[in-house]
Structures are given as C-alpha cells and as structure tokens.
Image 1 (cartoon, helix red, strand yellow):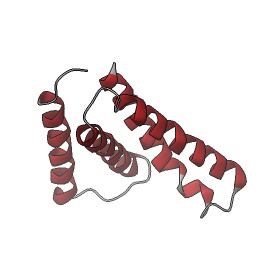
Image 2: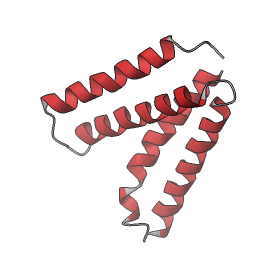
Image 3: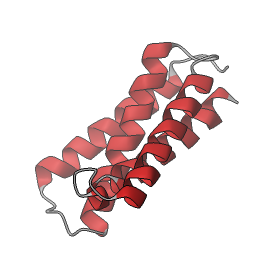
Image 4: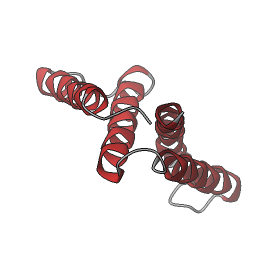
Length: 107
C-alpha cells in the first residue's frame, strides 16, 4: 500500500508542478488556491507513504516521479526542447526510481 500511496503522491506532484505557472507569481487567487491544495495533497500522500517506506527512498522516488512527469509534460504540452542530454537525464531518473523500488523491501 505504501508504494501505491507514493505513486499517487508523485502523480499529484506532477499536477502541482503544472499548476504553478498559471498562478502568475501567486497573484491569481483561484490558480494559487489550486496550486497550494495540490502541494498539500502531494505532501500528505508522501507522509502516508513514509509510514511504511524508508524516508530517503520515498522522497527520492517522489521527486523522481515529479521530475519525469514535469519534464515529459513540458515536452509534450508546452513544447519544451528535446535533446540527447534531456533524454539521457530522464533515463537516469527512471533507472534510479526503478532501482530504488527493486532494492527496497515491500511495505
């Protein structure tokens, strides 16, 4: 269950990362409220996942999911540039998350 909570937390973090820009520097009330709520939900789910997983592993996987999701959405939705370095970086992050999962006991 901890791993499912962690994946959910990571996915909410991806949504949160995409919700920041519409706040216009946190000057727009509704987008700011959405952004703050998403951040709170992500951290809450992460805290629940940490009850059954090592803190370091949970946080590394959480940020890895967030980074991969944010970069991928940036490329697909916002037409951010794609180059070999970014593709290699994504591969390394995904590999690190997979290794952390494979070497951490089930909770």
